[in-house]
Image 1 (cartoon, rainbow, N blue to C red):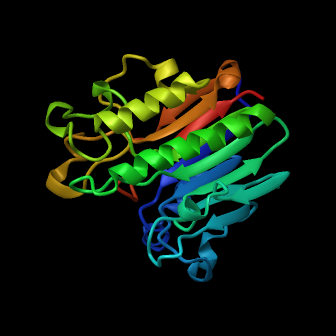
Image 2 (spheres, helix red, strand yellow):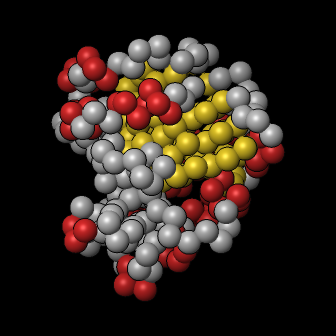
Length: 257
């Protein structure tokens, strides 16, 4: 089935550095209907002019803490409504969520909190997961949901190069994985695994250390998750692993809507 709508998502690991890398040229080549960005590390007042993509309406959500977190959403068509955060003061000061409402769906882009080296934020992350799931379910009652972004979890062993040595590493703890399983049990699907259940070595993040990217020692931390009833409209879920410019690569979801 031919797709007529494309969403691209990318954790850029700092908007200003990403723009300097000339990574914007990828966006014009990919030409998505919506481009979602995570980890801008940019206060609203500091978002560079060049970040405004020609032909797109751009929306930004930044953390109170400077140079930390932050997400963006650029849409060719103006959404019906755009909202920031999930309506929870404690969580929303970190600028991790933007929701755009369209005629047939809600699009949510998120940069999920990292539990940190040594897992100091695991408890907070579990609370965040719970609150975010109830936010997604509320949206889903109104219109189906497309969630994209850096969800900071490798769901199964197949989703990272070294599962055995990472069971207490942020992003692969049993707690984070269980929470992702819970999300999928509430009427949502991981589009990539729906289409490619057994595809190995499919990663979206590689540490800058130890030449990990050249060796493809990576993690699949970035996703397009959709409400069950949108699955028939999904044409493809693609990882653009060759595209440089960040320690994550972009991904695109092709839909027929």
